[in-house]
Image (cartoon, rainbow, N blue to C red; front, side):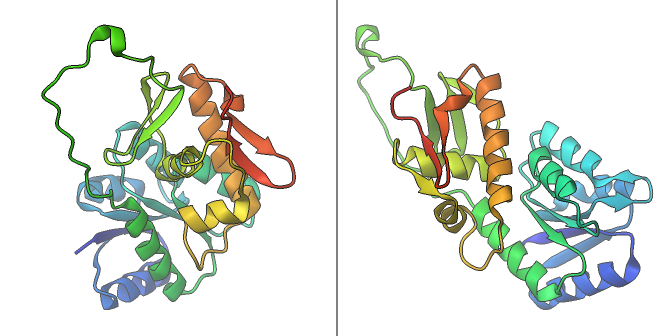
Length: 236
């Protein structure tokens, strides 16, 4: 059974979240500080994280989790109606965000959806007893993803992506040159029932481009089709 770590310093909010999650069958651990969250992190299947904590910012925990290579999903709670905070949370590595006040039913639904996305597909088994001659080997593709291992590569070099960035890239790479509208990307990456804004998609694509460029690729490999959406350039 998935175990949820609730990091929230307001007791009433923390208790209501814990109650709703336990009622839905989840295990729950509560922490009211960054230090407490770090101690409980290893056992968490998912983290619900308030950005404003007594001993620091939730951004610090997101950064630490992602730098350590942990793929633990994170849903951010924020009381500020500030787009910059939401965009920063997503770019830092959060998987989703919810603005206070919220309904506990919505939180539980988002937890289930994020956990579904976090499940890797069944691995594809492939064996070969005949080595490929060196002369027959091709240069690695500019952009590639392996959905079985959840790894992405730029010019054959592995690049670390967030879960949403990987899913966006995999979706567009499934049909290079095809334009995906923002609504189509939301439907394929988040699924039905999510009030994801265009700005959220734009923020994730911006982060994806930055990582592609840092790995030696060209940011224009992921093109913006003005007024429509995005596509992977099929003529790099």
